[in-house]
Image (cartoon, rainbow, N blue to C red; front, side):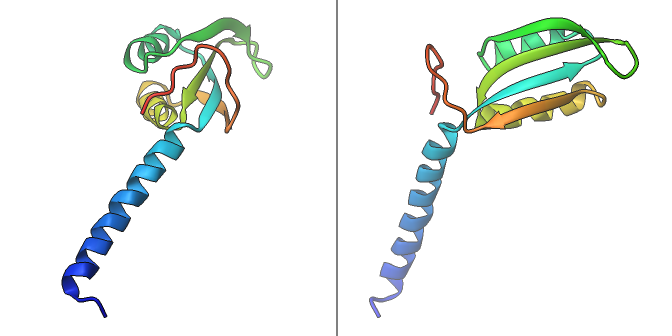
Length: 114
């Protein structure tokens, strides 16, 4: 109806608009994560601190199933940072697991990154 040129510009505009809105909205979705690992958590802690530039809390625990030593790491991340952390954890330890809560409200000095 408006010609090929208008159609191409409309497609480009719609794609860019969708990507920008998705990036801004998804980046603001926050999550909290518990990571349970058997190995020493130093590498995971270093990754969270140095690569993701986030803080964390960790403590020693004892596994209920077999009384083995377990480490628990707790951190708050954005959705994209959580995806990067999951990729890293797959490389580091196959027996590690995490519990994550999406869409949580975080108040305080939690820096939102765009």
